[in-house]
Image 1 (cartoon, protein in one colour):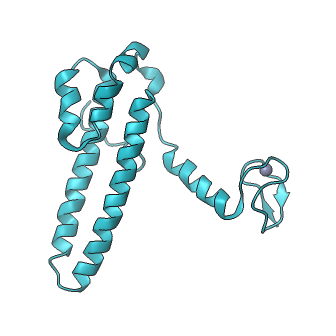
Image 2 (tube, protein in one colour; image 1 turned 120 degrees about the horizontal axis):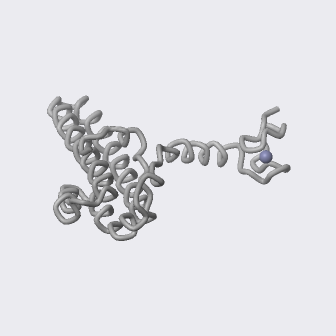
Amino acid sequence: MAFCNKCGQQIDDNVQTCPNCGAPNGVAGNAQNFVNNFTNTADSTAQFDPQDIQNNKVMALLAYLGFLFLIPLLAAPNSRFARYHANQGLVLFIFEAIAGVVTGIICVIPFVGWIIGGILSGAVGIFGLVLTILGIVNAVNGQAKQLPLIGGITILK
Ligand SMILES: [Zn+2]
């Protein structure tokens, strides 16, 4: 026997949809739980001025597009919301740069390094893309929400 991962109702192991609350269980439920946990990061939206958020969503979005994290810092220096996302964009940018150097070094090693380096750079590329999309979605939704795993790092106060 298993338990529904939403309402706790006892359900059969092979049940994909909880008969009590309709929540997905089994493979679909596990996948959804993973996504929920992954994106369930610290949210400090309430600490920001709603007018600031409204005015600077586009600035916040630009922060995630590579070195464009500089634009919100230069164009909206007084926006705490833009600065919050500029920090997230900068952390992501540094993470990708370091990961690029590390995988580049690994790829110098013939054969084994090529394989491991190739797999790593693919994984980093996908991870970076996922974080970029999450950051842009947060910015457009007017949320000051940390990126998974690396979003807790503060470089720009
Ligand atoms: Zn349920």
